[in-house]
Image (cartoon, rainbow, N blue to C red; front, side, top):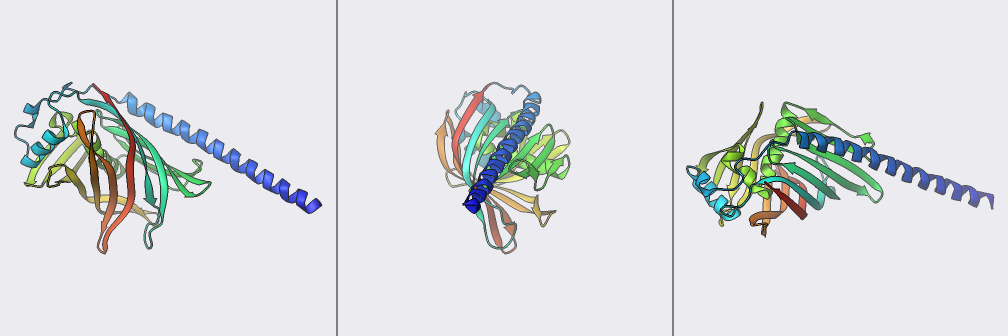
Length: 286
């Protein structure tokens, strides 16, 4: 029947077009990812000292000293780079009812000069994927989602506010690569109380501060920024932000969290948008 042949032809061409778009998008996105990672590695600096010395903890706030004694092993080598694989869910709704979608990601982190490239893939519906770059490289921030890796849905890139927002992520996630939180790595600590302290990190002209909260055991439980940019209706608005860490485990002599959540602290209550578990983490020591 002619109508059946026509239908099969349309289906075949549609599938062929979808496969072609997917392959083209994946290739383009891989190229962009490699370019970001190459810039990241090009900015890499030597990590000094080569090993963690507990004498470095002298003068730090009590909860910070307690944390490092729990998270690190005396004399252990310092971290130079990290690779992390995440799996979890992402809330794509900017407001109103939550719309959680599954995602997977790979992340490359450099301890000095501080930087990272996060390459995420969010599945909106089966067969419809949004690729996302979230990065801090050479003093510049990047947040770039693209449908199939081809069509940009939004893009923030450069210095200024976006650079601060992304350096905040580097510092907040340092619970997963804890030697990066030491004073020798550029982090300055200020006492608040017995369960919290403020960490400040400067990279060139970019300077940020976050409030770290420690649980009863002494490990990092929360990280908070009073002002961080988020996209709402196509515009960037500033809101309080918080990251939560849990499920601590031992890896390579360090105690790190395996689960995390990021959320905006709205007047009506917290609005989580990122929940993930580390599926794999590989450390490169000095």
